Length: 257
Image (cartoon, rainbow, N blue to C red; front, side, top):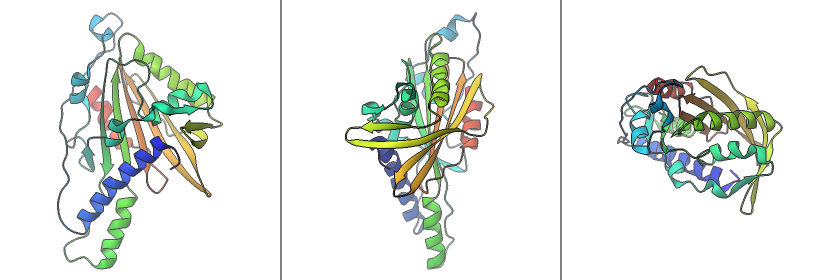
């Protein structure tokens, strides 16, 4: 992909997929991380809800391997690498969308936590033919990888962050251009995605990126607010067509209560 930030995310997904492909043609298992859950309560009269959670408090609320058996759940290297602070849209109102895609927190969260969930590719059985192994390689490259982020805010910070994202999806429907250093990437449009019912309020949208040479990439985004915590989901696929990460969203929303 053309921007530094997006390329970093895709390369991370590539590395993860290629690692799986090597396993598919040989043997071995990938590692996972674990955690727990809790239920925040939304109430204007509850003082505790006004204080955001720290990173340590958010970490146990992230989805784990046990929550998503059909996925490989792991640390999100792309989100940890960050580096998206230099990405600037040509339209100021589109900045929240660029921040979400660039792994830059919206507003001033009290704490953040991230994880990644990658669909498991089919592995060839014992004694599989070369053709079956090649099919497994192709399957490994066509899986969708979802970055999951939690951010908790003091006061009404989560509501404000959600509001800026929602407004941006409307204002930037016709697309925008992102400048990252000497690289410019065109987002051709911001469109709606199947509605998601979760948390206190939710938002689902997609972006279509111009990869030049006639190629396009469609990425899926979902944002769920539960009390003063914002859960964000960014799904991409190396084939260029990511599906909405419904199972990942449902599992994470359930852990938030």
